[in-house]
Amino acid sequence: MDTTALIHFLSESTYLLVVIVIFLGIAIFKGRQALINIICGLYFALLISVYFPYYERLIGGITQATVQAGIKLLFFIALTFIFTKLFKRLMPSEYHEGKFESFHKKILLAAGASILVMAFSFNVLPVGEFLTTNTPIQILFSSEGLFFWWLLLPLVFLYLN
Image (cartoon, rainbow, N blue to C red; front, side, top):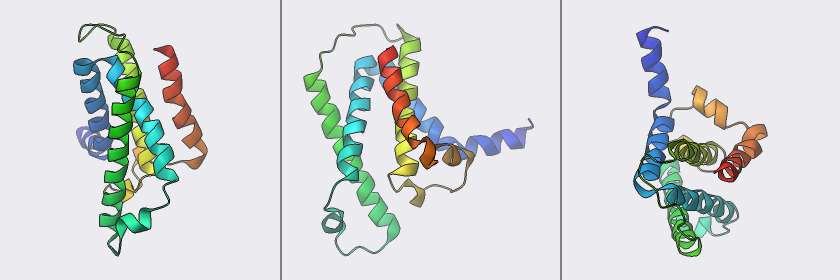
């Protein structure tokens, strides 16, 4: 693989790399329980945002597609934040560990959260308004036939935790 092909691949997969780094940072500095709460919050935010009947009222008379997409993304992020805080209150924080203790489990949970965000981004959320289309990463995660399996995989990672 030559240097230009590597740079092209990295530029196409920047979104995925940023998401993985963010979740891995959360796992290292906040712990596994924080990622477990985020994963559960993502699942509940997906459920509410898919069946939210008032998007037209929320968006109002805005006609620009990018602004509409931004409002929907902000709504999803707000729901995720609220449900993550809810799970932080409900679930006991049983993992008292060092930053690099159980690192393989932290990597697994960060991968699970990243898979959820990527699957949501290309199947449910209007992230396509902001990203380059038809990248290999998007093709991998946007398949409707694989969406169920992308949703199931983080649950397997939670079980293995």
